Amino acid sequence: MPHRDPEEAAGPRPAQETAAPPAAEGLIDLNLLRTFVAVHQAGSFTAAGQVLGLSQPTVTAQIRTLERRLGRELFERLPRGVAPSPYADELAARLAPPLDALTAAAGEGAGTGAARPGPVHLAGPAEVMAARVLPELAPLVEGGVRLRVTLGLTEPLLAELRAGRHDLVIASTRPRGRTLESVPLLDEEFVLVAAPAWARRIGAPGRVEAEGPAALEPVPLITYAEDLPIARRYWRYVFGQRLTRQAAVTVPDLRGVLAAVVAGAGFSVLPRYLCLSGLASGALVPLHVPEDAPLNTGFLVQRPGVPANPHVLLVRDHLLRAGRTW
Image 1: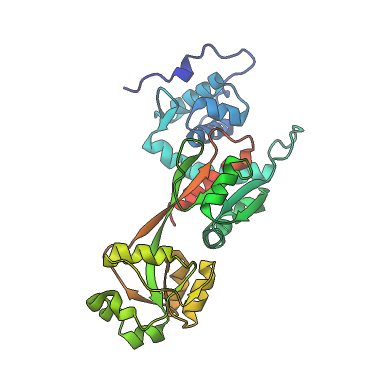
Image 2: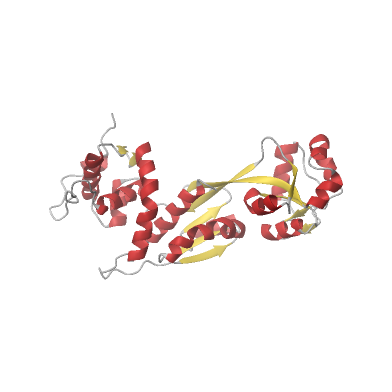
């Protein structure tokens, strides 16, 4: 039996605010659905009320009304916030995209004199932003969301997030401490690749599987930094060895590394999402196919609390839904 949410014990609902009136038979008031999605995204009735401009008792009453209409409990009331049921997760996944689009198309506060939401300041690594994030956010931009994008390395971007320069940061590592909140966004799988000519020349992948990294000695190494962070991780995780060789070419952008590898300059270790088209077309060949490839988890990071800009929530939740398929 779920126990009572302290938010529900906040006292009677103010007289000027009431739950949404009953909808016609067979229909559900759109306001109830919007409140439900806000609670699902915010994780509590109070936080959802702040986003919607409603009191917590009003949000509670609307959720109770929706639960009665659906004949299901949507949220477990916890000492701090609420936890969605599996049915609520499924319902939110179906409702959130069209409601986001409707909100953006209508304009936040349209007809009420409310100010237009400001731009969402989003930051992250250039490669994942170009290959994954910005294409995914195109529908929101078409619907009126404005973006201001900064590209860079994780640690400087997180420092700028703490200082208030960004709303959201996609980070390659989970931030330490309690000054920032983070949730996993995507897993990058690393692959060892080269152009087909190099694979034929060294007899890969069979020879690499038989001899290990020694088979790669004739092939130049292409990487994005002198300290070879991705390649070193692959060597340690897959081969159980320390990588001691130096790079033949360094390019401070993985897309540049990919272009050099496709052109036949050598081999590299790259995130699979960057290599998908090259692997599909045959422009790239895996030099080694381990049973368990190394992964790196990327995180979506923000400052604690509910953002004042509602479009920050739109972008955040849109990316989290998209990240499940990346």
